[in-house]
Length: 494
Ligand code: C2O
Ligand code: CU
Image 1 (tube, rainbow, N blue to C red):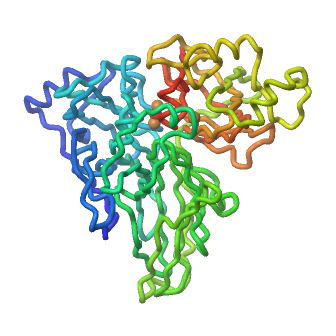
Image 2 (cartoon, helix red, strand yellow):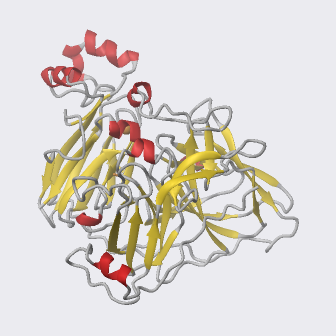
């Protein structure tokens, strides 16, 4: 079986070579590149990967540098990254540094922040690693197919003074729809996936492989960085008799706590860092089970304990991470905005209510129809527009559109988001992290910083942040089929 390692990109000091000079021509004007900036190269292209165990053959994928997932980019907080992306695909691509608070021109959104990288061309990204944490990178061009075929990789920014653990590990979780002969099914972007819960597959991988057993030792402390790189699958991981402690969400430190119900939930694009103390018996085998979809639970991997313990009891080292330099939103003076998500196939009950009891909608107290429709006319427009998913009544058709919101720069904002659909949606904002301050009117316990917030069907979530990063940014659902089918918008910060 695989040893679960992701190759780490080697860092080279920047050299004043001809190549460096031509890369320099593409640097953003604010660049203060100097000798010593870590230089990375990423080459998105075709590859083959042993996703399923033998006797299955390998699978044709698209990936970075021939490796699945792409190489782990690892730097220290405060370092400046320069990453030259050479497109070896047969189609245009870009790279988005998910969760990293980059300058707008480095955000990798085709047409909105840069021209897409044509086949054979190179684009050099350059930005500072302002926040420590667990991030990832992926294309923003036809993501539902490019990510779905294997284009993604981890980006880890280490704290200046990392907390003590025995092993610091990254698990990139993904999900594939494979045929019996382990080839990728070609039905990307089909209408059924777009209208329902996206391209949920039939094969789940950790770091690009279907896992069997993961070797651990009794008494060992692991910092496990979980990244959900799947197009659509939501994970709910149950670590059996272990008690994971969540220390960071979407890269941002959070007050250490046990996950709700003991299950670590990750919507697409989300990251969770957990501290896992290996507390079971030497020689034992404990399953990690994914319980997110009721009735579809499955064993993801076994934690296989070595016969000799590392130590008898768990260490008592501190687990609190130092905060990142995020501006604190001022709730009392924050400017408020409303964003409503609509569309998709609706539950039978919702359809019935729509047809039957429109007059009662205002006084419905169950929350069932809360925020479903501002007005019937808007709903009719949506139904006739051909889009499947809508944000504030508009279905995106590309990355260029009028901003649905313009946020005053350096001011605090609260966005009240209503999921008026029958589906889960992980909603992602570019360029900023935000505090999740309430869910269905109840203040959240940890006021967690996130860049992607998973909304349950018909849930109402309030987020708050200081809009300190100027430019035009995407706001979209990270179920990539929903994004492709309209659930995407632009907000401006000016
Ligand atoms: Cu991870 Cu707009 O994306
Ligand atoms: Cu969605």
